[in-house]
Image (tube, one colour):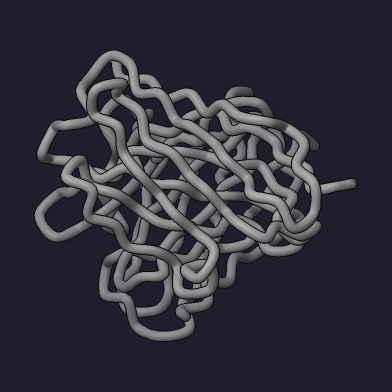
Length: 107
Length: 122
């Protein structure tokens, strides 16, 4: 199975901060990488698919980049609604696998 | 707007079979553009893909669970289901159903349910 490793596992930030979350795959996955946001008790939400494509309805402050084994999710100006846990997921080959998550908390 | 809702017992005894249903509303499960997916999230293993099903009944499963998993679809009820046999405490998790979409050659889960917690305990 492809292992997905996210860093950091958690971070504290303030409204307005720019934050970056990284995701590394244990083997090359081209751009078969998705990012999700999850809040407790809510349905997870796709933010970015195919590494850099913004899902319809997702604010433009979210962006994704990378290819091969290294990927990033960037939030350009953190908003109160963005405090959540973020997951990367590879769709290159089954079994699809996820990173362990990055919890973004209020500083 | 498409919505998915998981349902089923919240408590299952060890060695028994976990059974969950995902009800799709606001759209047809028979839409040929999509597959339907089960996943789970446990403290020990994070998010884990369990398996996927097409409206025709075609399935594929995570090899780590394949021996114990059955996913089925009922197009007349617009539902799909998960059965996981011989459960242990390691199967305690938050279970999600989702829709898998395709863009060019890229798959991603674009609609999810809120999840349902299943605890395995006697």
